[in-house]
Amino acid sequence: MQATIVIRAKNESHDIGDTLAAVFDQSGVSEYDVIIIDSGSTDNTVEIARSFPTRVIEIPADSFTYGRALNIGTRAATGDIVVALSAHSLPASNRWLAELLEPFRDPRVGGVYGRHIPRQNASGPELFGMRLSGVMSEKPRRQTRDMMFSNANGAFRRSLATLHPFDEKLPGAEDLAWADWVLRHNWVLYYQPTAAVYHSHGEPLGRLLRRMVRDQPTIWGLKLGIIGRREQVSPAPAPAYRK
Image 1 (tube, rainbow, N blue to C red):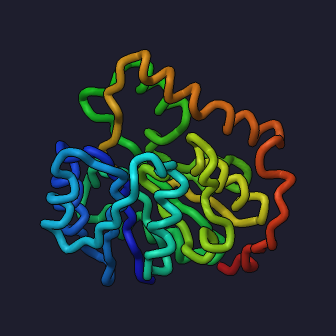
Image 2: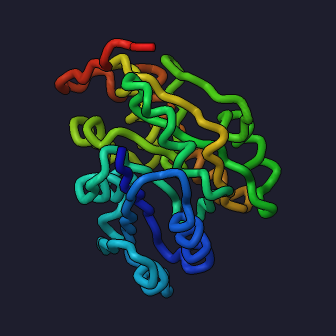
């Protein structure tokens, strides 16, 4: 299977060079390409990205939402699998991509996400949230009910994201809303701890709380059935499981 890696970025000059160097040092995978969606960087993020063999798509900063940027990358992708990676998510090994793609050998798996290893700048509250979400776990999980997913280090079948794009109106947690739809159509999500990245925000408490406030309406809307349940979409049933 061929993959396209989509990296969303804005003013990521501090990290994007290291991230791309690691991305282009992957082994155990066939051909893959890399797309950068830049939403109005004012530093030299774009210049650094173009120093690697990437495709750079620039969008106005005022048009950005997490879902819209990823949908643009998905439409431009050529791979069967789209890998979503934050510009400051640094692959922890040169087997990261191979490990992230491996669960897709099961035709019922619609999305895979990998482990987050916190950087040294991670705050106490941030570490607590990461542990609570399960993205620091070293145990793999096959999810048929839990909508946990992460577009900071995740992958999905392009056919599914084309049929049901990420919600461009949500201010955050667009990955969880998409994962909820996947599960409701009998696909499986898989947590692959061996596909690890170094990722944390190092946010002060105030900024962390603002991010949580941004995401919580979507999370509770999904749990209460206010978001997503009433939508009219063509179902995409998963194929029958085969051992």
